[in-house]
Length: 121
Image 1 (cartoon, one colour):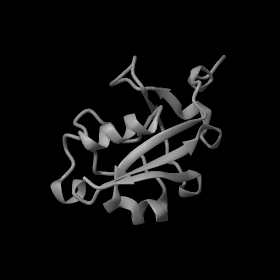
Image 2: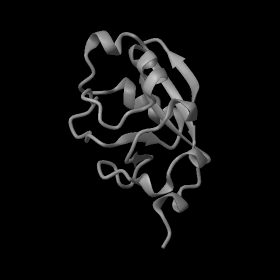
Image 3: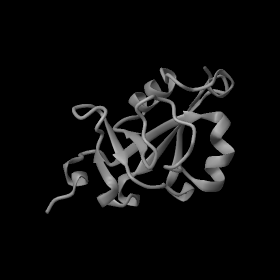
Image 4: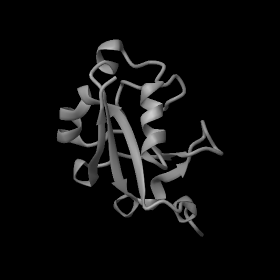
């Protein structure tokens, strides 16, 4: 049986968050069970990834629930080589099934993250 990941053509996926989280991410990677979520329909246990950096950035830029002090710290976009992800944990984004985002059901260690870009808000 093919995994969802076999249908992805991208070599990399992207995750955008806020610079205020940078030191925590450096210590612990991208955690799927964090209490802070940026969208009402975001679920615990999932790290949301985008198929390109621009889409990832736009999700952070338009987040509904990011507190001003966090949002105002700026946006950082991480690039993740898909080969470093557990393919069985990649799923279609249930909030955006036809879109350019995917769900990763687990944590992503910092060693698999590369900074793609940083932006002021």
